[in-house]
Image 1 (cartoon, rainbow, N blue to C red):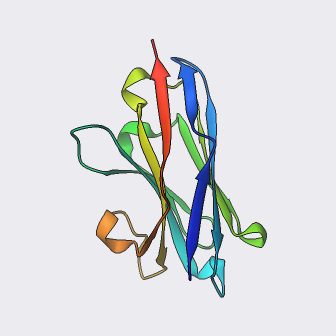
Image 2 (image 1 turned 60 degrees about the vertical axis):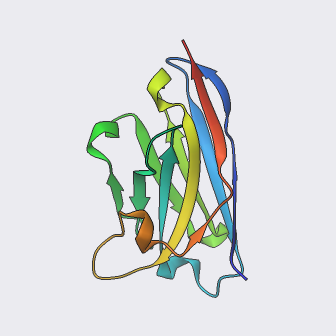
Length: 125
């Protein structure tokens, strides 16, 4: 049974930083999976923040390039999202997700099979 557990969310002032972590368990080989970070604000659809292939190649939503960095440690079955220069509009529940690697990196929610429970990130002004 695959499980994803996020951690690292919280309350931060605008301009601050947070680092989210996602630990996966129950997988035969973590490196065979793309890992994505999504977020969902109240009343809005879930959107991709960043994704990373099993070999470490990242993909970022255009609007977030330069502020967020995604990484992974296949030896630890973990992925991370370093968020900097946070803005009030970054406030959302952040989810990590896992999907088997394919020809191209997965960037939509429906392409991911497994999801964490989410962690709240609140950015105050």
